[in-house]
Image (cartoon, rainbow, N blue to C red; front, side, top):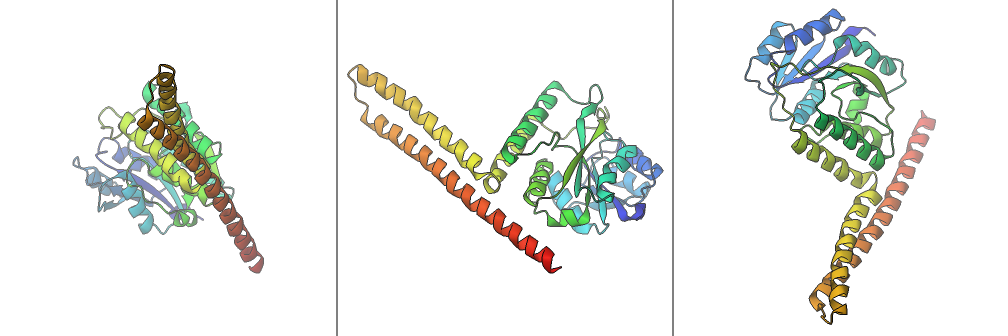
Length: 305
């Protein structure tokens, strides 16, 4: 294996302030196989990347997720490093990310930004949001990952080919993390340095809007991994709604007022909530049986080989 077998994948959108230096830094580390997938930048990002010797491909549609999906279809190198083009990550830390992959210890390595970030790299809102999203992810998927939103990762081409990706926006890192767990890939985290964005560069991330989208992605994808959690949340919402209206109905009844329509609504809320819990239990049973079946098939295939 040599560095030509490693593709440095950089998704960009208006990163003229940082892309040139980033490509130079990776070349200093001995990485010359660099693919820039550009979202039709208006500031000359693609031209700068091309002038620095990178292979540049323009996106056919919008969104970071779409860029990643398109790029993964083009890459043939056995190993891939994905890094954001905003200059917040250090090229010299790429070997640390690659080490577990090259040694066969991991299929996917995530650079953990939350242990070595520089002052000013995160706003207070971003830092709180990252911690909340990671906690939600760990609860839903029963893992202990610390930074699922990191934009600095290393993986094998084989592991990427296994992933079924559909998200086209900033939810792509979340979906990649979920798919790695669903496909039972070996995932490791390596502490990395995280720098503040260049003042000349523009941020594309809206902390509130994108945070909600990422959180909803974690929840929606739980339907096929942890259906008890997915249906349980819905069930709880309906039961709480039923208890809320029920308290009002009972209170009115003590005052001699009968609320028949609201009583019926209360009963429907609680019954529907309980049904959601039953759906969750049945779905969880189906998912468990499916996992066991897949595991048996994989074991038999290994024995045949």
